[in-house]
Image 1 (cartoon, one colour):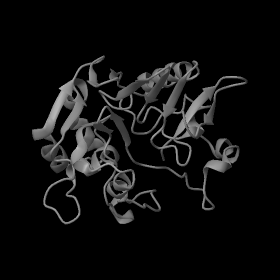
Image 2 (cartoon, rainbow, N blue to C red):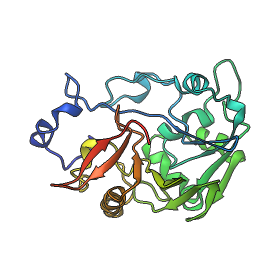
Image 3 (cartoon, rainbow, N blue to C red):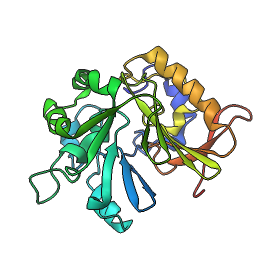
Image 4 (tube, helix red, strand yellow):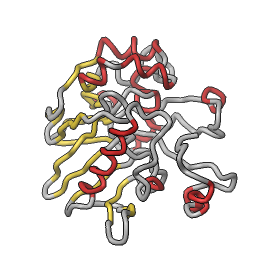
Amino acid sequence: MLFPTSTDVDWQAKAEYLDEAGQLINTLGAVLVQRDGRALLIDAGLGTVSTSAWGGPIKAVESGEMLNNLALAGCPLDSIESVAITHLHHDHIGWAWRDAPGSDHSAFSHCSYLVSDTEWAGRAHGGDHGVHPEALDKLEPNVRTFADGEEVFPGVHARVRGGHTSGHTTFVITAGAHRIVIFGDIFLTSAQISNPEWSLTIDHDPDLAIAERQRLLDELATPNTIGVGAHFADVVFGRIDMDGGATWEPVDEV
């Protein structure tokens, strides 16, 4: 369903990415950036959603732990000043619009929601992929748009390239000698790294998405560059090794 040009033979060679039922294992979440006493969240996860709410080929969903995980990380919600959003799909904006447990407003209603100007202008496309109009209505009062190249937080620059959505954004963090590239849904699984030509059924501009994946592979292969694949199951952080073809090499820490 996700990768219509892939074949059963392709997935037989990538069996380690699948569970016993042959389902692709995926993750959803956010990236917390803390610097000089300030905090930024990149994306807002899914929120608490049942499996039945997804339907289709989605066989099981476990969700709702992001707020607890922020607490475990020692980050009070009120210390987060902004939520930067890679794109307006429901698994990246969940806690930004869904009510927090025991509340009648979202956990981040005190934050600015940073969205690329191109993405916000094309937000109606989200409805094609299950984004509720109610969600966008709730986001709107807090939305602040940014342009390509803008610094949205100290040391965090936005790169608006489109492809997966009309204004899909990568956020690049500079940290000492390192660059950390948070690339949203440019790649949806590390299994896709060796097949950047696999487009998603939900890519807004498939040709542009393929070109951006190929460009990103070259970038992530440069020294001192770490990628963050939000959907990459238990290998979210990694580097690209181009020796013998592109592969994702997980890293535990910088």
